[in-house]
Image (cartoon, rainbow, N blue to C red; front, side, top):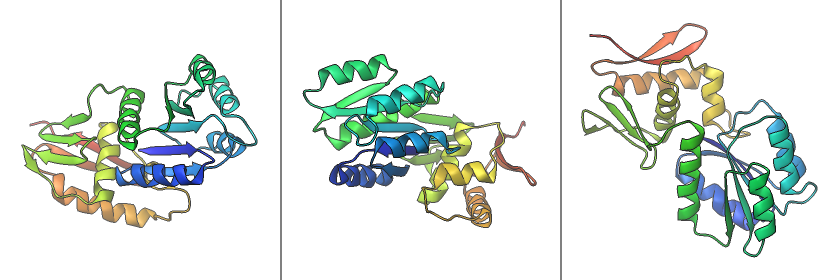
Length: 224
């Protein structure tokens, strides 16, 4: 999961970054509306935008208006002051998906983030199933035939991306983009190593990570 946070309060931003990274997300942060608008114009594919409305340089509502005017359907969770009812209404009318009034509990924000990202991916449940393999996106645990699989944080991230795109080709470039934040260097060779480790742990029975040489990987079910 890749999240962009647009928040100018550094203390709050740091708390959000720590919380969401601990939950397994790759999280990038900008501190102004202009930076947010620029980031959303790049080719980076985010799963969610957490948008403070009181941003400097470009108001959060304008960031949201421009985003929707470009036809981008990225889920947006807006953050507002407790008394900012009018701004919340404007934000929802402009296409925001949810809002939270400050101050808020991080646990509630994390729950709303999970709900919005599931909705953005067209999933009603936090559990993804692929044959005997089950992955709980909330608890970040995977089981095969009910047995827990011991996976590292990076392997869990890879598995989540492959499961969300089950049956479809995922390139190394897409994997790097989904798993890595700005400034984090992960080579294609490193992706190959992570895939190799993941294969050894999950390729049981009808589960297979197929390699399409030069193009990427695909999580498949082998027909018996």
